[in-house]
Length: 341
Length: 75
Image (cartoon, rainbow over all chains, first blue to last red; front, side, top):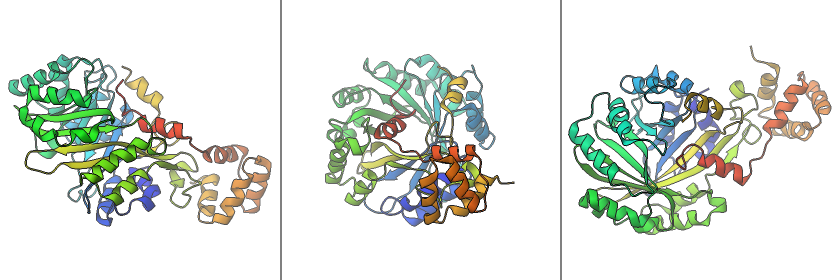
């Protein structure tokens, strides 16, 4: 079973305005060589017009990690392999996201090098992050300068905030590390950034008002020997749009700001739902699942990215793939047994 | 070698009329097995139970929970 089996189920939805034919073709070409047990996320740019759609996979079990480790070169392959060892040095990681950029044609039958994102438990120590996790992500010891800047960022976090994700960006030709912080309100973000990087504060000012009233905010920035002035701000709501009118209001603000086309807004709000064999019999992966399983579609979150000298960009993250416990994907029990935290 | 249920599903998946007939019968295993046998296939009560289980509806809560998943919020 491959990731493309799920995209085949979704095929009638992989259309304009969110997916132009060329981007849908690239997605499906890559998905054919990725495992179908994992849930996926489609990263869709919301500005008017066609744009690449990137694909991420969530790795939750040792089995999934080992299978992909064999197909990825070091340090990413080694990182996945190390994480798959119960009780190993990377055991605190709760799950790993692999993000495949599709701004260019993926190679035939070769898993491209992904951006790697480790999800951390809330109580993780900064010592482990800096001395174990990040060197493992990078495949070499972290420089004193980079490590010192990251330590300053973590030490300055407000009490309610915590480091949730750490990204290795080598797939994009960078040795920077992306830190993603959870638990700050919009009012806390400005002074936090001001304490670290006044330039970063300036770039995010323009989008902060868009996130007023939005829940579950994430702040992300890249750290090399300095903090780089590319700021990501993302947010969501606990419920899907059918039961949460604030999604519509949030997207309306994005449209008014020129960050999202009205047609893409409408398509995103119509995304959530699910399919089974009975709703999509001709596209269902019968050979692999018979009639079992559920393919979900959910709206995860919206992200804005701000950089000096560039207009802010908005993206939405659309989840798809097997529903846990539906007989079609990874078992949460297997995940817990391998990576209990 | 494909099992009988797989072959059956591949045979009926593109026929909305037959799928609707089957769907109306799957909560009555005996009737469903009889109908399937008239189509030239031999399914077991376990096969019919699988078909019935797969014809599920997700609630809004189910979908909200799936959306939360492992991504949100932090443990």
